Image (cartoon, rainbow, N blue to C red; front, side, top):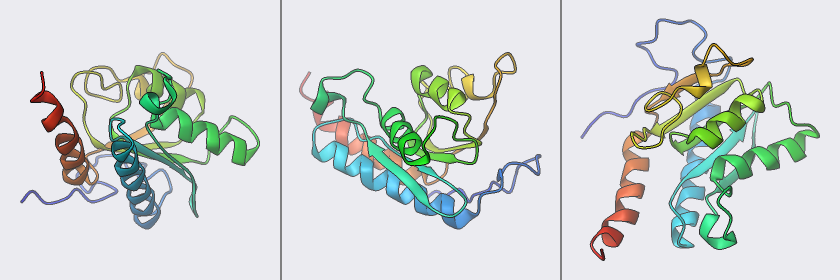
Amino acid sequence: MVPQRVWPPSDSDSPDDSAGFTPEIVDRAMGAALDAARRAAHAGDVPVGAAVFTRDAVVAVAGNTREQHSDPTAHAEITALREAAATAGGWRLEDCGMAVTLEPCPMCAGALVNARLRLLVYATSDPKAGAAGSLYNICQDRRLNHRLVVSPGFREEEAARLLSSFFLPRRGRR
């Protein structure tokens, strides 16, 4: 068994990798995101979950609902950002972070930058569509007006198992 990555990463060369968030709140947020991913899978959507958090609390949690709502933008990250902004009373979420079970796509990574999030922690990389380091690096692109601290690989094994168990039976039906 591969050891689970700790947060903040101990192999980091930057003292700012925690972005001021405790390991406890990040773990709580990722747990909520994993629960949302399980609910999404149960409803027939790709099991991706996201949670927006402050230093003290998880303020919004969502899973993918693209199939349920026939909405191509109903990604977990977008829905969680909308809920967090409604709770905060504004779109600037500068004191927030996000935990997500799969590396965000370009649309979601752009939304994280636009929301001014401070931190992105994700579980599993997405080599086909990841925009937080795998295929693109929108979250840390110096040409943009805002950048996030990005920490990949947190609770990776758990999230990868969810995705595999969802897609394995579907791939066999092709």
